[in-house]
Image 1 (tube, chains in turn purple, yellow):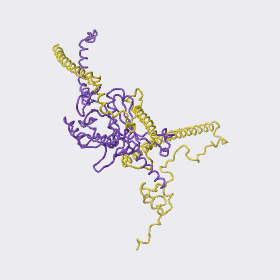
Image 2 (tube, each protein chain N blue to C red):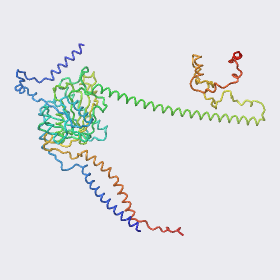
Image 3 (tube, chains in turn brown, yellow):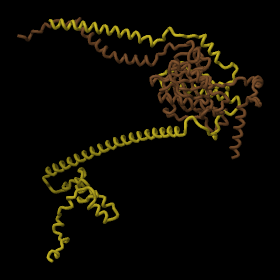
Image 4 (spheres, rainbow over the protein chains, first blue to last red):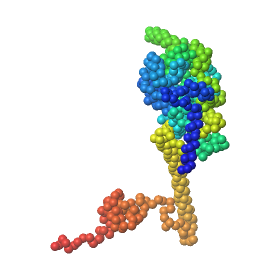
Length: 310
Length: 276
């Protein structure tokens, strides 16, 4: 019992340390912040990121589950009701973001019940990026054994090729700001037990989420053996983002980047269909070729043709 | 000749049609092909991108604790189609990143790992984890069952072989026995059926039908027994008898037929009763 209390005390200490930046003094009229902020130079920066997460109407259940998974991974997000995906959705979304006091938005747009697009935007000033989401596996359907605290801050790992080109750099910054949980966020827990992977393979951004499991008795001596014994267990979800376009503003503005290799899924399907449809044409073509060949090379008259006639 | 001409004209018509179709198809192919290559007239505003990056980026001297980002040097070529290699690359990235991050966190000096007695809401609910567990168990069971089936199949195979071996041996022995009888006969014929030490051929037929199976369908079971020979094993004699008499299965006919003893047995007839 005594032991437990000790640990609880330790935790308290931790929390105190976590909320180390000195709070502004409370006055009768409110927070007395102006002077205090200037005092502490290191604490000037405070991440107040809030992410609005919504989806379009008529979204697929699978994609909706993916969205819910993302919501459960981001303690600093606010979920809003579905939005009609019309031409004017940008304006409505910007409005909603402003109303909900958010600074960025993740908008899951489902089209034709099968294609999922993800909009990632910084709200008032932009930029915004549009992705096609491939290879979606939700937490529910992936029977993965990993699990981690809800609200613990993730460690974000990026593959090095994010720093190679300007548009990847911008996307990295965007992802870092939206997916990273702000330090000292109210719902965040002061431990780190999961890690996000953002990796560019084949010009797509792949997302994975792993639980960090360290053997319990090793916790106190992580510096010695614990780091080597650490293992990762995947938690899910999985998805793969194919960047389509990057715009200067939020849901609009000048186009800054276009993916030259992007083929819209509609076009892809049309191609497949057309390939199938050409089956008959090919057959007819082969037939006529044969006919032409026969006509061009007529058989020589058979000299033994009327040998048995008499 | 006329027919031929007609054919030819038709052919020409067909050909022209097909050629048209081919042209249209090649048109469509021309549409298709460039999609697989990078299109050239795309927007790529490098300055704009960098400007935007500067706009949204956090100040340079931000503490790492705010970002928690780790860069990982990725292996040069990862085959996207190879699931295992790809996932392995992600895993190594995560592991490497975690190691670096933990080193950083440790240098800050605050505890960062969840103590074992700290319970809080998890991302996956308990019911979900139970489902995962049950799924794992089911998979394990499936594998075990498959293995068992495999084993049984192999055992069956072996048993079959053994049986075949036995049959072979039996046939061989039978043949040998017959041979030896013939040999003995010949010897006796040659010696003019003289009684002597050749009298006993050295067989012992009493030993039983060594090479023949018993003709009884149910060896060791009485013909009228309906219990299939289980009568012997029982402990309640009366019950057993009743079972063998009235139980399921077996032929009833045998019971109702007379035998040599039963014809002569008048024990059950009450002679006096009728006369009265």
